[in-house]
Picture 1: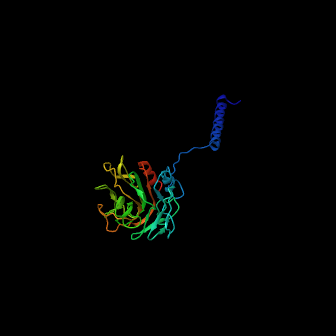
Picture 2: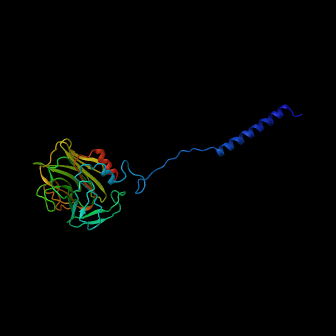
Picture 3: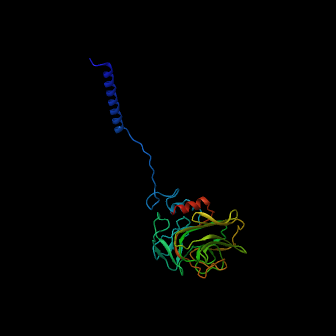
Length: 284
């Protein structure tokens, strides 16, 4: 006869072995959960910066009633800058028209090349005159290492130097961005920083009776003047890359822009800070 204490000890040992086996089997077949972290890169073919994946999509979302939208992605030698806004305001490439695909390129998820302006003859002008635009936004992506030249503005002549010029964004002799308007007196707002570092930058100027003058660079407001609300009453053409900027503070001796451009546009409305930030984010 086996003593009761011995039988109990063997029984307890057996039960412990069975329990351990059950735990092992359960661990092998049960699903496991583990914490993890991941980073999604915003590359050319990966995730996008919300809410728009491309510059074209961002611009298209806000181009209702635009004066024009030029993507500036045509091949070298083209004479027509296609207007993608639906306004039918196809522009004309004046002088030399060279296209290139630099690395890096602004708006890397968009198709098309960049427009390379030679600093002596290259610019774009709109096809017909506009009477006294007083509420507007001007926009362009650019890169340059040259301090000087007009980026985008309004002038009285389609292809030659304008007698009247106004509503202009230009680079001054120290490399700062300036937005200027005139109505009896010269009014400008100027970026604190310089932008001739050879990198791509996005610039927007806006003006209206209720908001005054605003200058945005790379998605952020950098200068403003709420007191100046009405530009000169004039008829003219929108110009991209060249026109006189004589009389403006820090105006260079060469009015032609030297560098590359993409996505030049004029809207017949004031872009909001959120819209400006979205347009910039879509190109990064």
